[in-house]
Image 1 (tube, each protein chain N blue to C red):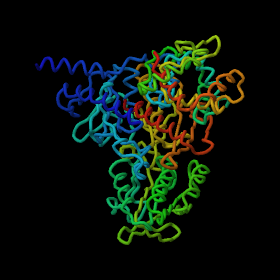
Image 2 (image 1 turned 90 degrees about the horizontal axis):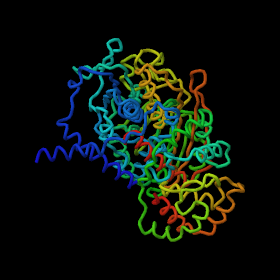
Image 3 (image 1 turned 90 degrees about the vertical axis):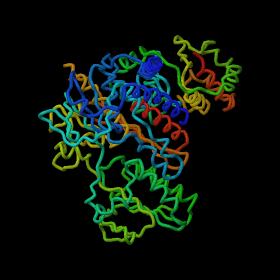
Length: 196
Length: 417
């Protein structure tokens, strides 16, 4: 019995051991340390409002950093950090995050909200695809596995034209968002967050 | 928030089981000899936890021992919300079990002396040898700077290190009769968390407005004006007519017997509840180990490795440092801890230290639901930390408050998760 207990405890320790996320001496890793306060170690955000950067496509990361730094995507939090990343070398930081395996958000949305979101997700798939993984050739990002709070906030920012105001490429999504009630945006966020 | 905390604790309990499996709690004497390379970290706050965890992440072959007398970590950020009753202290309290799961040996002991030449930390009668030492002792209060304070430490609350004093100050605020006077005194800069006292003003004023509308909050600020986010705080205070703010009013004397403080100008102010935030300096171990500068208050460090300018192989991080254009904030201590960890690991491995700069994100709650923020980014120029930009939120909002919650959950996990 004692042996079994010990074995169970060993398993418990193994479960608790941190996942190896890559050494910190790879290019970009040390520079990305400042990001982990909000975005989690190796870009694996644990919170509902901060996006997961692990596994993010470099083209999208670099566009986001560039837009934040230019004030095109207004954010008092991200604008200073984006300028810092630009000065450090955005390519290295983008490559580092892209190389990290993404673990989906630990925030689990309500099952009923996920189902309502699934039923309403048709319009999203026109651009983001049925998989929700997006299309880099059209500048459409991956939605899947991101925290629902982050996805919802972005949809609300599109809806009120506070994300990249005046951007011609985003006209269609903003028009779409304005037609969707806020509660349904929460359902859509829940659904796309749950997609793997 | 609740969900994340529950998740956090659930995982922590697994690590706790691991400790039980290992037998009884380790003692300092168990580590009197070292077999491989060892980093000792003094202080389990924002800087020390981050440094300890990230040394292990950067190089798991390095032994890390963290010395922290408290069994639990209590977050200072968000603790002003305990005064207003918006949060509980339990929601800000975490154990160190997940640090242990990273292989950090956490010893709940107090470092009593540092021997730089012998590279040892004394803990009572025992000594811990180290290859590199990271000192993150936070701040200590300068009790002697206010006449009558040293003798009244148990009765005059600072609530500036989150914990029992925070809970007691909240209790006193709740017990104060409607029509009572709450006096908050702010020390001269530099002190821990520049916007903290002004956020506290908002939280106390918000509570009084809803619960004791005849009461008054008198603020005696040693500084000539609000030290941080001044315009945003002053705009927020428009909602609280119960605030009476007096700049350039340094408190020099307290007399709890007659419930009165005296300012440098000779004004005497009566109180029903007093929150006196004393002037501050680096944590005691930094002073006794001669890590502080000529001012005997703060520690000067190299801006890229955080190695003390006074003693080799000893690094100082967090609120105890001076000379960098950064605030004494939890976020900065976390950044310094991570940068210092990578620097120390690089040095121990004979590698070039990468160029790394800190960042600062700082939210302040101005009511039960709304927050404001300031963000600073930095770069290294000529070997020194230089600010790239400071940005403030354009106003206060519930959206910033949601981001504040996200920030807190993330950074607590970055330090302790």
